[in-house]
Length: 532
Image 1 (cartoon, rainbow, N blue to C red):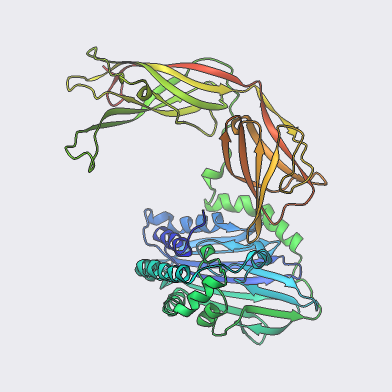
Image 2 (image 1 turned 60 degrees about the vertical axis):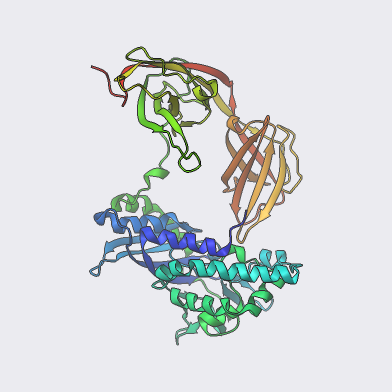
């Protein structure tokens, strides 16, 4: 489901609660082939700081994590300024400026860069991509539907305006471009004597523009009838540009002449890349969540090394008004089990015995309350976390004499790569193995998504690769997977476009075994501590 543009904007605003209101400066140097570098400077007023000493590092990690289309960084620094703001500075290298995105810190990072029929270089900001223009069609709406569209947009903006005003009001973005050749035409850019292009934007201008446009019912009716896709972001177009930048037209510049590169991208980027890991480690900016999981041998049999109570929740709610608070009398335990090897999956846990220290039976009377199918595996797949629900213990109960049952899981001896037989990356293409089918290919602004269907469960697929016709592995990212019956669908996306010819390989688990692993906890207090 697509998200309304106001909701999208509010989500972006809410992120400022944690990292602050941004003042951003981006200075681009662009080579004729679209490669280049950008000096990034960010100041943020912290709104909800939890660690004063780490505030600058948090901002730096956020900038690095939420930057797309960047090959590497150099000269990174961060600090707390004298006026209490967090400051980040660094130079980012990119091989295609149209793929560069800086989430959170800039609302002006959608860039088109190409040559026109006269061989002029064209730079456009926040304009529709070719795929969007092609996909845009006029909506067939009745006058009632148009009126409803206008009313809904204005109502939602009115509800969210106070929040947007509080945070967007202090946001500032200043962007400059150094382009090859001689600048010939400029729309909505400011240009100095050296040919440097600059465009500035601030949150208050956006709020003022939205205020003016929201009051213009005729403008909103035009948007509805033109089939504008306002669900992808705040309204754009020439009217919005006029409000923000002064001219009713695109944010656009063209250059002509002999186009020479400002620097050797390959050499300079490689030098920066060689120093990147050491720089990040020295600055303490290593993203621990992105570190590879500890490698553990596959499970080859045996019981749990240990099982402990990791969390307890007592609910003893008996409410006279069921519709208000509900009724819940239960004693829930989260169990953490440590296995001597890595599992393929953990599918179900069943409690078969639960005896209190006074002999009371704590096992629920209905069977469905004794089992759970929601079990979580650690990154190494050798630890399992799951919940069990028991009856509320009597006031005289001090602990649990025995809690036992079984975990049902699966393991594999290894995995091997298999070619699915796909030869074309187009909708409807079928392979020769596992009944693989290309269901859909969806075009986004600067990327594509592909949905693949397999006649095997996703849990049996360890990894997947997509390759072009020459055998080169495409830099895809998996964003979804879901099982249905004996099959599954898997979604992947790629910056750019999938080639017409290509193949799909999957790493398939071998010798999959179904397991029944017993667990037992004895003589612990109600909070999980050993009983004395």
